Every structure is written in C-alpha cells, then in structure tokens.
Length: 54
Image (cartoon, rainbow, N blue to C red; front, side, top):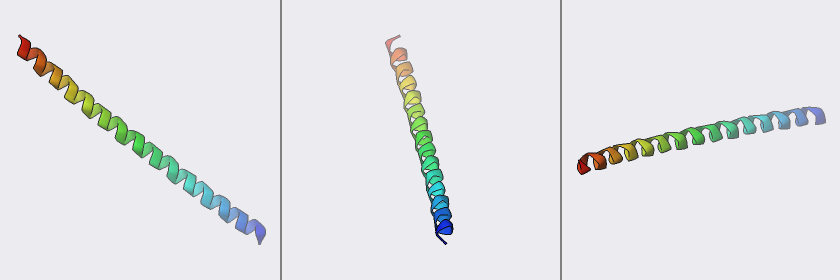
C-alpha cells in the first residue's frame, strides 16, 4: 500500500513539474513576442524620424 501511495505521489509531482515547465515556456514566448513588437515599433519610429530630417 505504501508503495502505491509513493508511486501516486511521484506521478503527481511529475505532472506538476511538466505543467510548470509548460507555463515557463509560454511566458518566455509571450515575453519574446512582446519584445519583438516593441523592436518593430522602435524601428518604425526611427524610420519616421529619419525621414522627417531629410
């Protein structure tokens, strides 16, 4: 009986670790996309500023 409980606990721990890893990947992806959008906006702003000078 103790072995079964231990196996269930280990299985649950594995599930939780997998969920945490997936959440971490999702957050990194979200942050990377947000940074890319910011960079695109900065490039457009720089291009407009450059065009305004000439």
